[in-house]
Image (cartoon, rainbow, N blue to C red):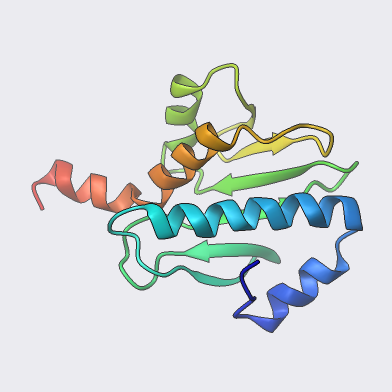
Length: 140
């Protein structure tokens, strides 16, 4: 388990109900592990944005922010992406039946569901390298 670099994020995780905390901790680990395994991403900055645990590629600028949080109602949780990035649309094309999508900005999970780790890791890697791919399309 990776340590929290921002005490505000650690406090927020402590405040989550235990069942959803465990799921969000697993999702956090997946984001951090995916970043570590993905070329060009570098070390993530973990902070709060809009009151949610957020993961930024500040070191390299390689991608867009990834946020995670519990859902307001029930015991579900979600991973959020920048709504104007087009990423969720791309994920929908790649994995039409794998995830439950919320518009152009999120994927939702029920606490009882098993995370589709391979597919979700691929989506996270695409988000964390979003700017690199856009730059490559423009010719550097």
